[in-house]
Length: 456
Image (tube, rainbow, N blue to C red; front, side, top):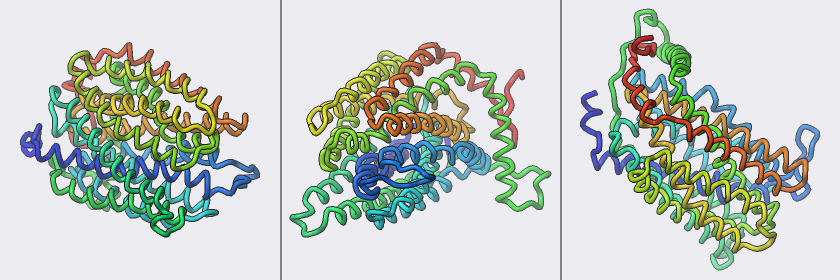
């Protein structure tokens, strides 16, 4: 705990931590957001669609099933890894390992070309797993480097730098794609270079970030019952055991559980919007990849101001009210998206500005609100749960979108279905007692392998 105390609110550590958001946001914008989904739907998948399991699916439907189905792979893995990292004091090591692997896989996506449907989906799923896993440990550092008074601002700073970093890398990729003729290269080649550059950006700035993030906590010695076992197997067993114990105890903390369920619902709406916007704009709105790139650039740079603005708003009105305000706007976004005209980019760009502002707010405040409710000595484990809940929730939105889109032949009714997630999330979040949730942190005791609760 001694090292942990010295890095709380330490400017150098906070900057290094926030710079990882700058690094990995290149993946979020170029790979998961703007370029790869549009490239996949427009060029990787044949115009007639792709035959799989006896059905011919469009790029829009395929991407929806991949985005939703891939979340199953993360469902049980993340909290176990988090528990292992907390027990062995290896958050930084886990974070760096997944980040480096994810960055290398992302660079390999630059080798994908038209017709390579399954290899593209396979590499995307591996990169997505690495991205999410590294983020679990990244988020797990937030309670270590902040206090209740600074956690909102520090979380917002991370997202703000992420939006700028991801936006700048997307600018470089977009410039390459838009100017490909002047540069004497084919558009497909320009896109491939842009995809690979996202992985390089993630790797280079990520390695810089790791130089300023120390390992926190201290490793707990392996219990006698695990003596003589393979160390990896022993830690995996402990991870499962501690995870199961924590789940059982978590059921007794109504307010934290209520927040998690609310987050699962409204985050599903947010993640579906992010995952499906590019293919929706390509297949349903018939827009070009250049138009989509501009929309995502607008989102990125507006989100920088949104993250900072909502950090200040939370100081004045409270974190929960700040999140509720964003969810009202998100519901309106889904309605407006349904009415966007085909072939016209300007209305999409206007909506992108609104999305950017509330995206920065809802992501930064949700992370910090949860961080203020959980026990600090098990932050990686609890953020592992947070990741599992967010990824489990993110299964349903893209899958429902894909089913409605493939059934109706249009993404418009599919985009409208997202409103349900925002409304239900708002209702449950409004019932969360934040003060009670924060006070419950003192009831947790982590003694070796098992999590216990005072008075239980």
